Length: 119
Length: 109
Image (tube, rainbow over all chains, first blue to last red; front, top):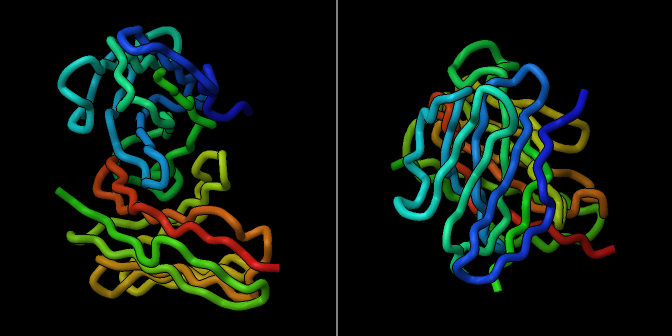
């Protein structure tokens, strides 16, 4: 049973380029969350998606950032016209359910992350 | 919005000693989760606390949820080198996890 798969693990972009980060949730999971982690900081919630729907994007910067979770395929976090301040580790997590419920459904399982470096 | 604070930010421990890291939320939480992240790794779920005053143990780790469900602690006894990493608490309201900044633990052999 594969865990949450993120790729690429490392991504280097020059300022002004686009970065595309991919996340395949665990089998059977239909809820995906994206977090950003700056060095020596905790994880900051960015966006919560279900298949074909954005449920909460309150943590996403208003410009240049977008996320999707299509019916088929992985979830994509897209950063357009990257700047040096976008350099961070981006983690994806998935869960079977996003709502309160039985204990097991509340846990979010994290992928290995994508480390983005902007030159 | 909800804020979760952790102290201390860094914990340098002599191997074999005990230590405690604390987590405080600005709001009442439905539950709290703890994660461990090794250097260069990703957060790995450790435990979830749901009930007021709940205490759970995992070998040398003891987790506690405060009576008001606004604070939590992690106590590690007889620290080992395998305990190195950053320990995050995350307060949960509905689906959203709000992470503290973490306590980074280093161990002196």
